[in-house]
Image (tube, rainbow, N blue to C red):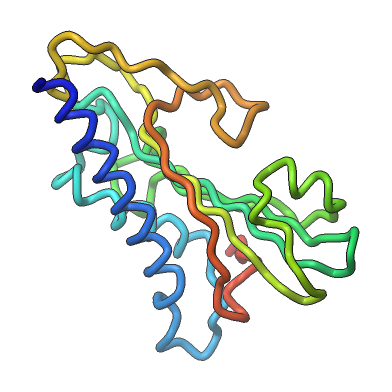
Length: 195
C-alpha cells in the first residue's frame, strides 16, 4: 500500500510540475517588452517547476533521490495545411556544469526546422493545428533515472519500469513517470531564442 501511494504521489507532483511550467511559460515575460522566451528562461522554468518535490538542490548531481527532472518542449506553428515550423527545446537537471543551479543546468533549444503534418502528428496528435498561423506547444515533463534505487524515493517492493525515450524515441534516457500536455502559447513567446 505504501508503494502504490508513493507512486501516486510522485505522479501527482509531476502533473503539478507540468501545470506550473505551462503557467510560467505564459506569464514569465509579461513584464518585458521583448516577450520571446530565451534558453535561460526555459532553464528557470524547469528548475522552478520541480521544487514541489525537490526542495533544495537535490534535483542536481549526485541526485540523492536517484532521479533528475526534465522538461522537453515541442513547439509548432502551422504555415499551411502540410507545412509546420518546429522547434525542440529542453531544460533538465540531469547534467550541469559547475555548481548546481538554474544557471548551470542542462538547457537549450534546437534550430527551427520545417516538418510536414504527418511528422507533427507522429509527435502528438494534439499538435496538429486547424488554421495557418496557429501555434501549439507540447510540454513533456518526466523524472529521469540517475543512480536510481527504489529505496531513494521511498519504495519498498515496487520497481518502476524505465520508459526509454518518451516522446523522444531516438534518445536513450531512462525516464520513469512522465506527464505531457499540449497548450496554445501566447503569441510572441516562441520560438525560443538561444541567447
